[in-house]
Length: 350
Image (cartoon, rainbow, N blue to C red):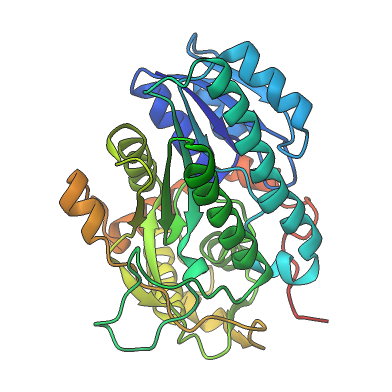
């Protein structure tokens, strides 16, 4: 299968690219190489005969048409998006243009290509989205997001992703475009751009800086190891029911404070502070993010029962692997720390 992966130089997209090439698929990686992208993420497959790269912005419709015509993919995995909630608070325009208009361009380019190819039965447009479109959950652990949960986005980022989900469903219903959708919980793991919580904590701890936690740290997230997610995405692409959506979760709920304390304990064991004090002493509570959702939790019953997928990595195992990866790959993250916004407090609403 030849797969066109958008956003394949980003965090989740690069994991998909690496997994797909390893599984024997041909991959066309389409990425605009904006601030959070890094071709180092796919360096291990860059010279593979089944890999091609196109530096293209999904807002450029003409370029998308060229890529489809030239490479003639059997399927699309659409991951390209602006994804940082804090940045969406400060600058929502980029999120509207990329996540909504860019997805519209992808759908139209894919539809044109699919029609001109004679509507091949095997073609798939897989739209990858987030559980943040569902809004916030109460503390009750029996309540989780399902595929039937009503959309209730609370940030410019989640609103833009909700809009893109609706566009994909509309193109399926109106034009018959063969689509599948997935909504995932919080990803973490190797190659995570150093503006998200897990890498921020690891790198700030190593630098002796404060470990910022929004509010009182009680916000709960479900954590999904990125390589588990990549496996699930490829499975949905190949075996998911057309027109269906699948929630992908890690079955690993914990509060932000618990997560940070776990990271600190791992660092205490792997790279003790010179003064012998625990890294958790660096924890600092900061003013909460505007509109910060209290809890996300995914019910993964559908993907488990229909496709037989479950996460293979617990949050404890995954965090230990992630910390070790950052300790072993300083050259990778050092090169990214001078990029715009990295290391700054964003999204204060001012």
